[in-house]
Figure 1: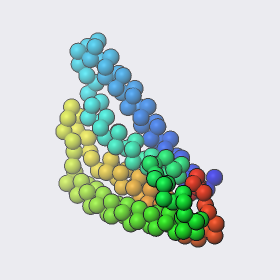
Figure 2: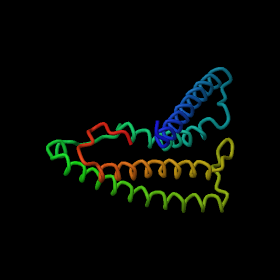
Figure 3: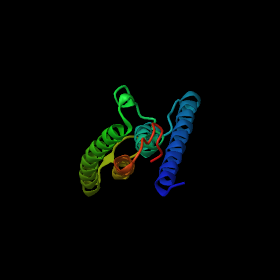
Figure 4: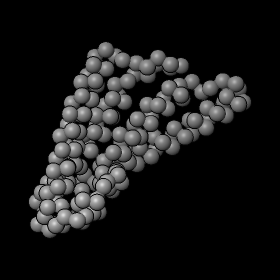
Length: 165
């Protein structure tokens, strides 16, 4: 297994663990409300942040496994070299856009860290660690797109629809 694919798999596994923890926390919250008429402190506050973590940690896996929605009506009719060129261009545009998102995420992370931003709920939660994970997830996705861009641009023949990054 290539190094970047291994990293993506580890992040996807971490995402799955977060979703499982979220499910258990929600279950315990429901039980606590029914039995004691009181929620578990912090579960609702943490739930939204955990969903964000789960999504951004699994972005790279979605790209590696090509689970994103794609329209192949045009590229399926192209010759292999042109198809690879179009795919390389799409990956280059994706990488550039993700780079802008990373920069914006970094600026938000920096401000969040400097201001010690917290979410005030039943328990105060620092926001910057979650913003860091968002930025890291975007970075991994950008790296995968860049790798795919290079692979498509340098491929001599058709790379196929299910191309491992």
